[in-house]
Image (cartoon, rainbow, N blue to C red; front, side, top):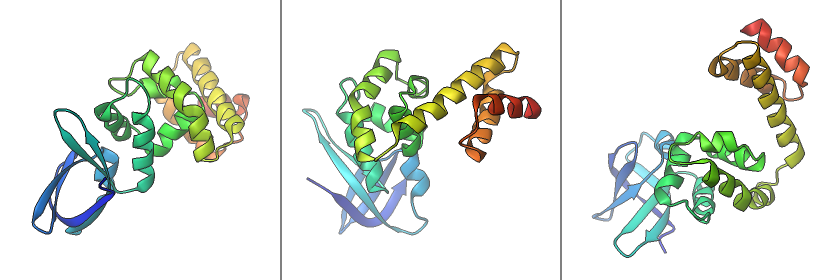
Length: 193
């Protein structure tokens, strides 16, 4: 019903903004991702999603259209309401959520506050095909990258390294060399830990 709102940014917090549009102040819920992208100027335009329930009409705003589309996709999953979808978009970058769904990375999705194992699996089950189709992703390369990451982290844990420290090093190695083999990742990680 309301596709976007533009006007003067009157108030802003990490979770909500108020935009004055011709004398009417619209209260709009936002994610931390959108908060980080808000311009420093007074004038702002947000793409919106209006959720109508029996007890409330809630407006959700996004700087990027793609974030709004991902929000709608998340809402289509049984067990995911607007507040959990917003938490997901606040915890992870939209690209990270898309990658996690496409690569069936339950651990990443489950790492978001309020999402358990079953819900994470349902998100992947319901959205994986849609995400691969919409974002035109290559399923195999993402999965292989994820398998190498997980296996190298498991190996480093067995060797006595703390997972959190190992994750930073392994992610940096994979970012610099996406084609790295499992053996290469572990060897480089051992040098850097």
